[in-house]
Each structure stands twice: as C-alpha cells, then as structure tokens.
Image (cartoon, rainbow, N blue to C red; front, side, top):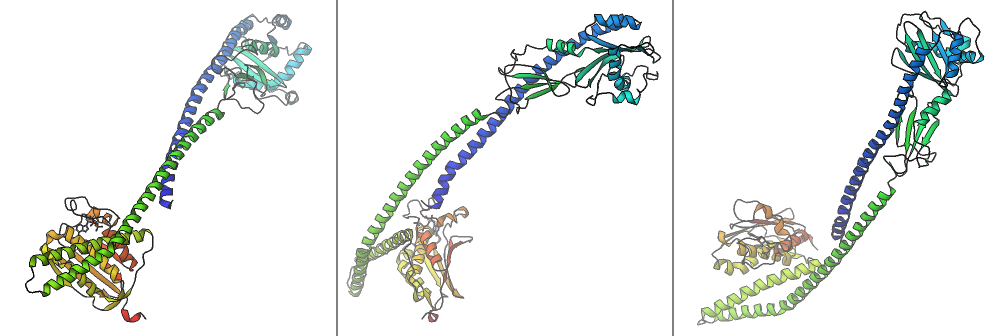
Length: 544
Ligand code: ADP
C-alpha cells in the first residue's frame, strides 16, 4: 500500500473517531456539569431547610428568654432561686444602667458557680459591650483586670456577634465548651445577659434534626449530613451513607445566627468526580465505533487494492497488445511507403490509389504514436523507462515531425510556420523529443485546427533548447491549465467530444521533458494554446 493510500485510510478512520470522541467527551462533560448543578441546587435547598428549622428554634427560644428577662427578679438571692427553676439558663450577668454589676453581685459573697462564671466570662465582656451599640456613650463594664483575662482558656475562640443593638446572641468557646449568651439591653434595667446551659442547648438543637439513622430526604437515596461545630467537630450527623475519612463534602452551608460559626456538610457516594460508569459506557461506545470504522477502513483498503490490481492487469494487457501490434504496424507502414514510392515512379498510376496509400500511411503513423504513448505510459508505471541520448540536431527532429504531419495538417487547411534556431549538434534523446513533439502537434491538429495556423519556434541557449508549439484555436481555459498534465484528464467540451484521445499524451510529454532535464509548460497567450518545451541539451562535442 502506498503512503498516500495509507494516509487517506487513516484519515478516514482517525478524523471521524477523533471528532466523535471530542463531541462525545464534550457532551458528557456538559451533561455532568448540568446534572451536578441541578443536584447541588437541590442539596443546597435541603441544607437551607435544616438551617431554617434551626433558625425557627432560636426565634422561639428568644421569645422564651425575653420573657425570662422580664420575669427576672432584682435581688441576688431571688435571682439564684429563679435560675434553679430554669434548666435552660445557667447564669445571669446583669449590669445596671450606670454600669455597676448587679449580678453576680459586686459586694455580696458569691457562690462557687458564680465565681467560675465570672472567671470564664469577664474576659469577653468588653467584646460583648462593643457589640451592643445602644447608648454608646454610657459607661459600661470596664476592662477586666489582666489576671482575670489570662484565666480564660487559651482555646477561647473569637466570639460570634449579633448585629442587632437591643438584644442578641453572643457566642464563644470557653475551653472545649461552646457558650451562648442571649442579652437584652434597655435604658431602665441596663444589660441582662443569660448564659445558656450548653448541654441542654445542644440537646434542643439536635432535637430539631432528623434521627441519626434516618434517611436524608429529598435528593440522593444515600447521603449523610453532618452538623459541624465551631471547633470543627461533628456535633451531630444523620443519613445512611458512611463517608470515608478522606471524603470531602459535596456541599457546605454555614448556619445563620447564633450558630454562625457552625456549618452543615453534605456527603454522598458516586457524585462529583465519580463518573467511572459513565466513562466505561463512553469508552465502550467509542471503541465499538472505532472497530466499525476500522472494519470499514479495511474493507475500503481491500477494495482499493483489488482495483489497483485490476488496473495493473489492464495496463499490462494493453501494453502487451500494443507491443504485439508494433511490429506488424511498422511492416504495414513500410510496405505502404514502398508502394507509394513505386506508384510514384510509374507515369500512368491511378492518383486515387496513391491517395488511398497516403491514408494508410497517415493512419499507421497515428497508430504508431498511440502505441508509443501506451508503451511509454506502462513503462513509466513500472519505472523502467530510460532515455537513450545520442548526438542529434533538434531542428532536424522538428522538421521530421512536421513533415510527417504535413499531409494531415494540409488537408485541414493549416499553415505550418517553422523558425528554427537549434541547428547545432547536441546530445539528446531523439525518440523522446520526437514523442513530445508528436503529442503536441497531434493535439494541435485535433483541438486547434480551427485557427488554421501552426507556429513552431526553436531556440538554443546555454545548453538549453526551447521549442514553442503554438496554435490559434480555442486554447485552454485557465482553470484547466494544470489539470491537462494529469493522466487520463481530458477537458470535457464540444472540442474534445467526438475527438479520439486517451488523456495520456500531455502527461507523457511532460514526464519525458522532465527526464530530459527540462520542462513542459503551457504559456499564457491571448489566442490559442502555446506549449513550451525546454530540454537540457549539452553540445555534442563535449560527449566522448
Ligand atoms: P488526449 O489528446 O488524448 O485527450 P492529452 O493529454 O494529449 O490527451 O491532452 C489532454 C487534454 O488537453 C485534451 O483532452 C484537450 O482537452 C486538451 N488539449 C491539449 N492540447 C490542446 C490544444 N492545443 N488546444 C486545446 N486543448 C488542448
């Protein structure tokens, strides 16, 4: 198989495969992106609904705590009793409107729990104060003593602050414990802040969420949602799916106040990135198509080889027949010419007979040219042709060709003009030069006879002989100028229709000229066709 066929076959297979592969890949990526996008939206909606239910819980809790603020008694002892009945509230921090601490009392003795409370709380009071913008100018709790501040656990995290200014949440970590303050401030009573019981609060929060083994409803059948606290620990989780330690969540949603430092994480298997099944289907389809195209390629290749073999056989057959025809044809031509000579010598010979013999000779020449072309073409196909160079004069060869064509051209009323300029003896292949000229003049006779004129000019310069063969017929359209040198190409027109030809004359002439170290080109002229042959012709005396 030659390189061109191989490239064509591979192109037939590879290009559609690559194109289909790319299209398939592009589509699958887009589909996956779309699916992921829809699923993400669904999951986010689901997580938001969890957040909303927690927000509702805290809104209710706020109502309860506001009521507790209203119900809070004044005296420390009464406050302590009050707290005992409220399991949600662990301690109360109360600053009067003047900024004096009313509870735990500044003067009266404190309980152990109150002391611990102050210890863990006083460090964050300035932040709590900053966060409460109501009555900004009022002196409020002072900076705690440095000793007290250092007693705060080093694990204390930055508090989460509430944007509202007369009430709000204040959340921070004290050691491993997450502490929630709900505060209320008004000009009459000052600041009252409840420290909530963390265990109870967490239990209540979890109470708002689905049971641990329960399904994550809505989106994927197998999923897990984790509630992650501000220290990054899982506070609670639910759903059937058991994610690996290395798994990353598909979606992450930060919660609203007062759990703003918390977030929800959503895990699910076979999502975002796990597209192995899709890839398997895709690869299987791709390979099936590849196999089909390969099969097609193989079939085309076999058909092509068969056709090439058949064409080769035909060329061989034609060339053998042509070869066989050559000898009898030469004999016919020889005897016809002898007969012509003999009749010419006899004074009372019938001119009609001489005319018949002339036709026989002309047709024989035509057949000889055809056979020479066919043989040359088949030799070319087998790469066996070789030039046989010898001393000769190009002008003599031209004259011989023109003489041979003279009767036919004359019969068509064509005037021949020859201006020779290559009369020196040079080294050339006379057979090749003759065959080139035969083809050109024969074409002129077939296609350019309407111009009634044939100009042949030869010129020799610097080891180069140039021969121009020009007619004044219809010429060759611009777009056909290259194609006429392709084997078997014939311009389809009224001109060629009905004119015998094989389409191998010009390609052979072209190849012979190249073999002769020259070229055959079609020159641009305003009327008719002008072929220019250039041949490498060194002077004869240099050869020895
Ligand atoms: P063939 O003459 O057997 O058809 P050629 O290879 O000699 O094949 O020529 C190829 C084609 O070029 C011809 O079929 C003809 O259409 C065109 N051609 C060649 N010479 C001339 C010319 N002198 N004038 C017009 N057309 C020509």
